[in-house]
Length: 543
View 1: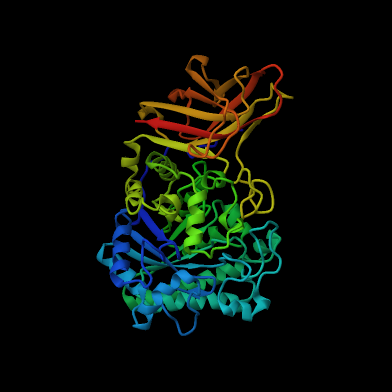
View 2: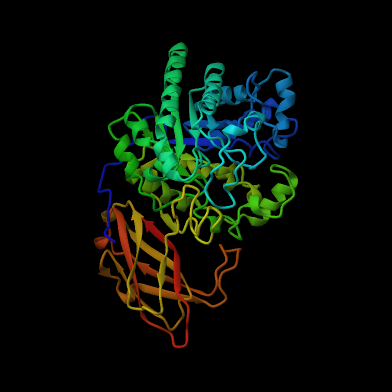
C-alpha cells in the first residue's frame, strides 16, 4: 500500500456556508420537540435551537416518498405517517409549518434550504404516496440483493413520468415559499434497475433532470432578486455516485450545483478521501460540504448490528413503542474531539465547510435528554483554526463490518465494500498487513500524538511488530493491555477477548494525508488458534 496524501495545502474555504444543519423529515415530529397538535411557537423554538449549532444554513426536508410534509399541496399528497398528523390543525388554519421554519431561520441569520428526497425507500414495500402505487409500472422491480432493498416503493427514474413527478414537487416548493435553495438527497441508492451498469448507462437522464431543476431555480431566482442554491447529498465516492446513476463530475463542472455533500447517509468516515471531490470543486463556485454523522459504523451505532427496521418490533415509526425500541439499541455517538478530527480531515482535503445529516441520532433514543445541548458540538466545526487549536481523536472503523443486509458482507447500499480491517493469520504469521490512516495534520506543529488499536484474539503471548510509513515503531513506545473478558456494550460495541495496543506517533515519519500502518505477527502464544482481527484504530493528536 503506497501512501497517497493530498499534499500540504492552505486551508482557505470559499463561500459563506461553513456549517449546514439538515433537519430530518420526521425526527422532530414527536415529543419532546413538538406536541400533538403542534404550535407555531414550538416550531420557532425548534429553529432557535438549531441556530445554537452555529449553522449558516438550515435545511429542512419537506418532500420524500412522494409525500409533501410541513405544507399542503393541490398536487402532492400530504405525508400519511402518524407523527405528521400533528401539523394538520395548523394546516387547517392555512398555516404552513414550512413558512414558520423559513421565516424563523431568516430571523436567526440562517439561509433556509428546503430538502427533497429522491428515491427514499423507507418503509418498503407499502409506505409512500398513493401516486406511486397507482402506477406500479414505475416502481423498480430489479433491486440489489439484501433485505434492505425490498422492492415496492422505490421509483425508476428511467421513466419521464417519475422525473416529472419529482421535478414538480421541487418546483412547487421553490416557487411557493421564500426558500434560499433546494437540496436533493439521494438517501436510497437505487434509482435505476439493478445491476448497477444500468445506472451508469442512464446517468444522462438524471443529469437532464438536474439541469432542468437548475434552470427553474435560476428563473425563480430572477423573480426573487437573488440566486437560489441547488445542493445535492450523494454517496461518499465518485465511483459510488456513478454506480447510482449520478454524474457528479458533470454536475459540478457545468455549473449545475452550488454545493455537494458527499457521505454515507448514516455513518461518518474519518478515512474518506475527499480530494476527489475538491479537485472538481476547486476553481468553481460549487462548495464542498461533506456529511457529518454521529456514528462511524453500523456495529457502533446499534448493539446487535441490525437496523431497527429488521427487528421484531410491532410499533409504527414515530410511536412510543418505536422510540422505546430505539432506546434499547443505540450506543454512544462521537464526542467533541471525534467531530473535530472528522472535520479536520475534511478541511485538510479541500472542503469548504461541513454539513450535518441524521444528526438527530446524537440526541434521540437513550440520548433524548441531550437536546439542544448536543447541537453545540457542531459550532466549533465552522472554524478550521479552532479545530486545530484543540485535541482531536480520529476513529477509524469498519463502517459496514459484521453486516450483510445490503447483499454481502461489509457491503454498503451503494454496492461498495466498507469493511476496512487487518486480519493477521496464524497460518502465515510473517505476512505483514497494512492499514491506511488518513491524517491531514501539520505534523511540525503537533505537541503529541498517539494511536490505539484493538486486536481481537491478540493474546498476551502473541508479539507484533508495528511500522508507520515503512519506519519501525520502537518497542519502548508501545504499551499493551489484555482484556480477557472482552468489552461490554456500556463501553462500545461488544467484543470478545482482545488486546489494546497503544503506541506513539513520530511526527518526523508522518505524512499530511494518507499514512500506512504495518502490522506483523512475529511470535505466537502456544496452543492458540484463530485469526487476529483489528478493525478499530484511534489516533489522538494534541497541539
